[in-house]
Structure formats: C-alpha cells, structure tokens
Image (cartoon, rainbow, N blue to C red; front, side):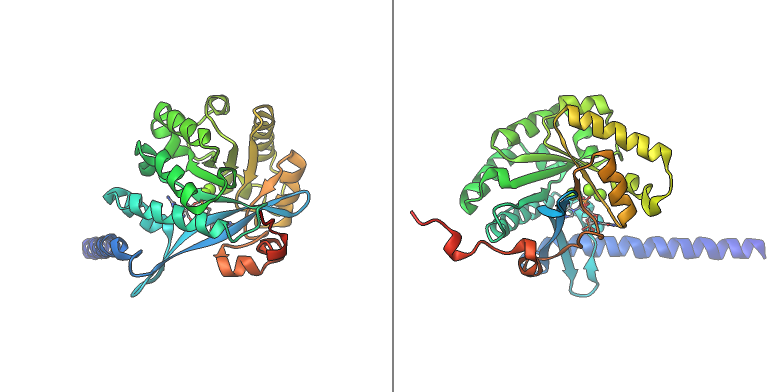
Length: 286
Ligand code: C2E
Ligand code: MG
Ligand code: MG
Ligand code: MG
C-alpha cells in the first residue's frame, strides 16, 4: 500500500511537472507576440515622500494579459523573456512607453523603469536610452533606471561601468530589491547610484508595529550609510501605518507600497490629485 501511494505521488509529481513545463513553453512562445498583439500595458505605482506625503516618483510595472490565461505576473514571464533574449525588444518597448507616458505626467514626477541585467549587458544600451530620451523630449533627470542588486552583482565591474555611462547621460540609477543579494554596505560606496530600494522582505519585519530589534538596527545602519553617501533610500512594500512610522523615524524619506497606492493604468494616475497633468495655461510659450 505504501508502495502504491508512493507510485501515485510520483505520478502526480510528474504530471504537475508536465503542466508547469507546458505552461512555460506556452508562455515562452506567446510572449514573443504580446507587444504586437496589444496585450502589454504599463501600470504605475506612486512613490511618496513620507514626511510631506507628496508623490515624487512613479514606477512603471509591466502587465501582460494572455488571451487564454488572463493576467500573467512579470515575475513569471520576465525570466522567460530573459532566457530567450526577447527581453531586449520588450525592455525597449517599456522604455519608449514609459518616457512617452512621463511627458503626460507632472514635471515633478520622476518615472522609474525596471531594467533587466540582459539589457544592461548590451553595450548599446546607453545609446538606446539616449535615443529614447531624445525622441520623447523627456529631460534625463526625470528618468530613473532600476537594476536589481543581484543583476548588478552578476558582474560588478561591468555594471559599474554601464551605470556610470547611464548617469553621464543625466538619468538616475537605483539599486532595486536591496538586501536580497550579497552586497555589503561598504560596496555601495563604489557604485554610481542615486537611490537604494530596500526589499520589501525587510520592510515586512516592521509590520504591525511589533518590536523587531534586529530589523530596526539593520535598517538604521543602512540608512546611516546611505545618508553618508548621499543616497536616497526607498522602502518597498509599505502595507501598514506602523511600517511607515517606523521607517520614517529611522530616517527613511521615501516609501512605496499598497498602503500609499497600488499599481494602476496611466489614465487612473492622471485622475489622482498628484497625477494631474500640467495645465495648458501653465506651459510657457516661447
Ligand atoms: P520590483 O521592481 O521590485 O517591483 C515591485 C513589485 O512589488 C511589483 O510587483 C509591485 O506590484 C509589488 N508591490 C508594490 N507594493 C507592494 C506591497 O505593498 N506589497 C506587496 N506584497 N507587493 C507590492 P510586480 O508588478 O508583480 O513586479 C514584479 C517584478 O517584476 C518587479 O519587482 C520587477 O523586478 C519585475 N518587472 C516588472 N516590470 C518590469 C519591466 O518592465 N522590466 C523588467 N525587466 N522587470 C520588470
Ligand atoms: Mg523595481
Ligand atoms: Mg523592488
Ligand atoms: Mg521586488
């Protein structure tokens, strides 16, 4: 009987593997046509200055609605697009769309765009960014490029060089999901960065206002180092007010999370008080 159960378990496992495999194959095939079929969209999530509760940035987050499967998470399809190299045209689409959308948003808002390590490793990437900025007319300081900590650490010398080239264009550079990789606090000094985004797994430790001495001390140390290096620190994944208060008291200036605003289509953002597009009469005519 035990043997029989074991066999069934193996069979169930094999069929689950088979399903995962076929979903993967299906997504890998269909993501190639997602852009031309109009299945992609960018949503925008606000980043707020905690003290003034003023929106300072929006992060562009890619959304794919598969005709048969419905919404597919970027955490699922981005790695597939990276494996096939499709991330290059996909990332270019995201960059163009985000810069065009940024022109419709208030001048005070910076637009943050996620960049894959595959894109960063392409030697032509800085030239692409420059071309897209030129086409869109977006001032470079209104664009921030987010690279994950693990992406940068894949080849730190190469990344340092590429990030330096991007900053020379005048765009901002952020280190995303900080804390999930193995970057030491001291290596932050050697990277050309404007912003560090603390991964939400650390921020989660401050939920509900529980005393979390270790999390607080760790975040406090990061914030002190960041202050010394003149880096802006963003807390990701703020979901309750206790987290916000704790981070604010630790000296964190900017936050992002469901508490402050969920990712939403551009049209929704344009309807919020902080997303009001510049009025015609405010624009200076030469
Ligand atoms: P990320 O860049 O760290 O983006 C933040 C993620 O956290 C988003 O997930 C966002 O919806 C989610 N989030 C925001 N606030 C909260 C919160 O309070 N609680 C929780 N639980 N989650 C929150 P999303 O949109 O599913 O994106 C997942 C990841 O996919 C992104 O993580 C980013 O690494 C990647 N991604 C998304 N769009 C793009 C893109 O255009 N290009 C590339 N290369 N990667 C992208
Ligand atoms: Mg990001
Ligand atoms: Mg992140
Ligand atoms: Mg993340």
